[in-house]
Image 1: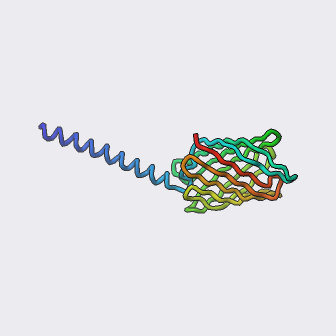
Image 2: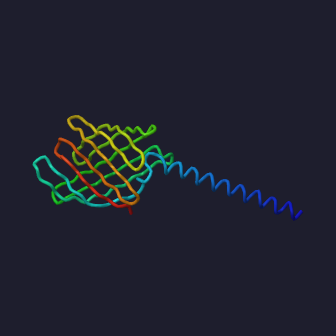
Image 3: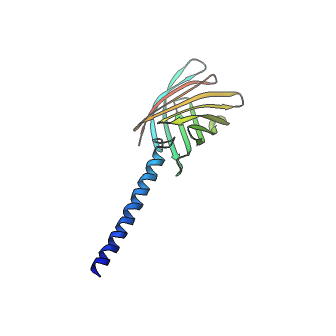
Length: 165
């Protein structure tokens, strides 16, 4: 009976070990998805270049939520300077390395679609709305992230460097 008791414990231990191994593998698969490394809160500073030729320093906070499947990303990016602010949100879905979704900028009541690519800590998208278009690029490496936006609208360029945490 003692041997059977130990065998039962060994089977239970093997089952727990297999469950842990599976959960680690699933976590690794999620973390290697197209939005790997983005999840969490970020903050930092940068500059915004406006159509009138002025450039201002800005402070930014971002929050990224990656869905459990690793294939969906919700982003909120809030930036402000002494005289300027923008509040950008997006909801993005991936199919392989191709991504598409919706975005909005609350302070100007602008919303539209986006499409592009994601993977390897990088997101590159083209965003458009009625009368507005821009390129948005995000690069994440560990706890550092850079955001670049370029357009021909009121905001000509944005360059931000943020850290996670």
